Amino acid sequence: MRIIDAARVHAALDYAPLVDRLAAMFRQGCEAPVRHHHTVRTAGADAVLLLMPAWQPGRHIGVKIVSVFPDNAAQGLPAVQGVYLLSDARTGRPVALIDGPSITVRRTAAASALASRYLSRQDASRLVMVGTGALAPHLIGAHCAVRPIREVLVWGRDAQKARALAESLAGRPYSVRPADDLEAAIRQADIVSSATLSKEPLVRGAWLKPGSHVDLVGAYTPEMRESDDEAVRRARVFVDTRAGATKEGGDVVQPLNAGVLKPADILADLFELTRGEKPGRTRPDEITLFKSVGTALEDLAAAELAVERSPE
Image (cartoon, rainbow, N blue to C red; front, side):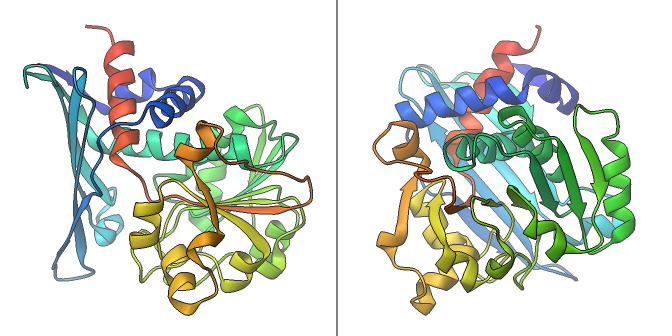
């Protein structure tokens, strides 16, 4: 069995080919039950244990075991920890044990970029990144791989972290700088990508300019939320998977429960978009909103590509 560490995962999973691989997997489909989601009590904020299986008969079986400990940042540790086991679906033989957090951040960012291919304007040039955690640099890189981004603004509750993230991305083909005023940044944004643990809306619908695209990646429980009701009202709403987003993502669950959003208002998921069954963006001036909660399908696609592109 091969061992593929984080450095090899990042080296193998360039954003553009990973976005293509995710698109192919969504078109093909695979068996991917809704992930097991368990709360783990701790002395501080509750942790979450996630078990995410997926398989394609005759190809591979994969399962990711992930924990999310929100308080890890105080100890200088990533919030997300875990491993991914890829096995042969014909025999059950383990093929590879892969670093879980690196698979997670790469495939999550690539899923947002895949959605952006269908939902953001093709000429989108200004990106606002809300949040400064482990996902933020990957979301920036993935969005910039599919759209001609020239300017990236980074906003975080901790201004020092926003500055540090911007500085760490210096020398890219696009400029990156911190944003002190979130409202002013969003009002000028073509794409707003948010990846936070917020329980209160950060992205306000009143701030969104016509033609903008909102990419919501954080708020992975029904109690969390990154956008307000006005954002949902103004936007055409899309999700990665209906089963996951309507059960777990607070940016969809809360508007559904409040009657602000109806199930029929979720216009398409990534299965329907990649298969051409539903349209994405239909007008240059419309606002689009994509809610991602993740699916084991994405992990399986990323794990297969990581094995293929990693040297023995």
